[in-house]
Amino acid sequence: MKWMIIRLTIGLVTLIFGLLVWKQTCVYPQRRAIAQRELANTEFKVRITVYPDNAFPTPRILYLFQSTSVSSDDWHEIVTIPTDQLLPERSDWVRFVSNRVGYAFLNSYYIVTIDGGGTWFVWDANKEVPVEQLMQRYNLWPAIKEIDMQPDGAGRMTLYQYLNEREKGPDLHTTDYGHHWTINYEN
Image (tube, rainbow, N blue to C red):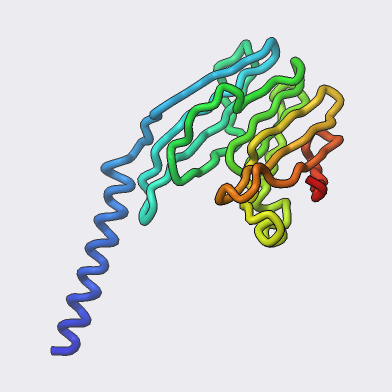
């Protein structure tokens, strides 16, 4: 009797897992975009496509960033950023500093090109800043609130507050278009 219960349990778990895999591969074989936006300057275009991701166990929203030259429709993926909810659309997620320099940010991700969209640098605050130190000192998780980048590569990043205990987190500064950031703990 004991072995029968074990076999039935294993069979039930296998059946449930199989149904979940089937749902992901057969019921939702292709993602359908729920939103898409293209922005361009005279050299290159950036497209943001928003997809639902019905991944088990937690559904997410995926933001796919792509780039191409203005004379092409051959899009190349820059990065896909997962979020746990649909974010309000901001008209300034993508910004062009010049014909060759552009950047975008969402959540903890910052992406930048300095060669007209040919190559992109992806920076993730969750991997690049001392998260535990920021949580202790500012009670914040490193999500990007604002970035101001200048044509010479100097820039400032402001992190979001967490739990409304501060108006904002520390500023981060760069001199190389955001390839490296230094935290200013003075504010």
